[in-house]
Image 1 (tube, rainbow, N blue to C red):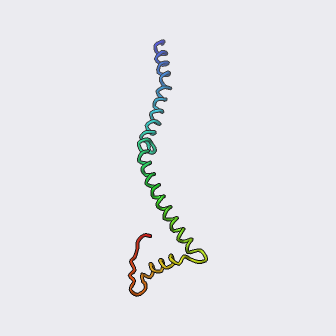
Image 2 (cartoon, rainbow, N blue to C red):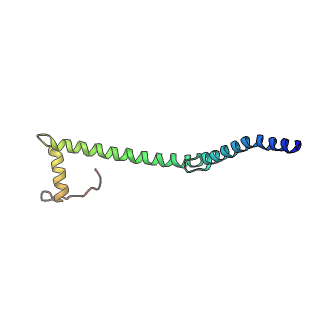
Length: 105
């Protein structure tokens, strides 16, 4: 009887540490190997860098287009921009001139 109580106490005393170790192992494995764990962090940071570069390019293009729109919206549109747009649309010029299409400005 005495041995049975001591064995029971021994195992009851081990339950809390065992459960704690299992829980810590579960959450620790997810912190390292999980969907948002440490092993995925480097790949996520690389993707973030690529997206930031794309954002910078799009922002630059947006600023350029906003400037061109501003030049056209004023009371007196910029004559050079109007001529550039007309030549681009018509692909025509004065006699003896050759129009060369441009893909980027």
